[in-house]
Amino acid sequence: MNLVIIRHGDPDYEHDTLTEHGWTEAEVLAHRMEKMNVKDFYVSPLGRAQDTASCTLKQMNRTATTFNWLQEFPARVFLDEAATKESLLAAYPDRQIRDGRLTANVCWDVLPSYLFRHPEYFHPTQWRDSEITHSGNLLSVYDNVVTEFDRLLASYGYVRDGELYLVEQPNRDNIVFFCHFGLECVLLSHLMNVSPFILWHTTAFAPTSVSTIHTEEREQGTAIFRAAHLGDISHLTAAGMEPSFSARFCETYDTTDQRH
Image (cartoon, rainbow, N blue to C red):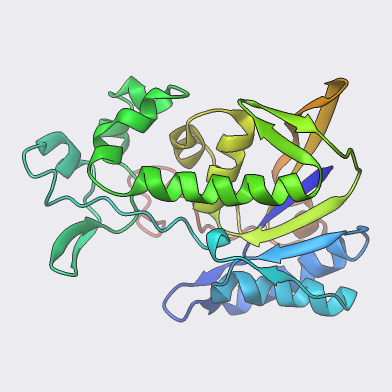
């Protein structure tokens, strides 16, 4: 089985849709996707993912199933609960009062000066027992997402068993997901059995990038998932388009026109 995970096009976050450039990216992506024999499409409920998917679905005269768990990873870190942890507070400069609580805007977007001094975030299991997971709902949201993901994979014949998948019905189906950077990293971390913090902080999948993950059944009855392409933007390159900057931060600190 082949899982194809696509990030939405260049986002207009304020209106939860695509920028003009994002719509062009989505149209270019649609011409790439129409060549693929796709079994099923799944899409996040958020507008920017729905809009991106709409171009491909229209091009292929197909429909998609919307799953709430494919929305951008919505977990929160409640910094009022971490008030005595000065290092953790300093790790989240992007925060706001939400429902009367001091909350990190994006729980997994942590400053490197904090993250890379705490090796537990890069351990395959110890990240689950960290300051961040104890200061919010990251762990419960993560577990809900991967449980729903595994339920879907089981419907195609691949049943999670520890860190492997039991093969109840092998297939070569192409399954396509339209979702978001943070959520994609969650899915990949689960398939690869690594901490999501590794992917959240060492990858940057550009808008409309395509990641392809294959099952590999080297032993009869069991499978692992192996990435063939991560964040592929060859469709944009072929169209002479520069990838959008969204998901990246400034290349050098003195670059004032890039995201800080």
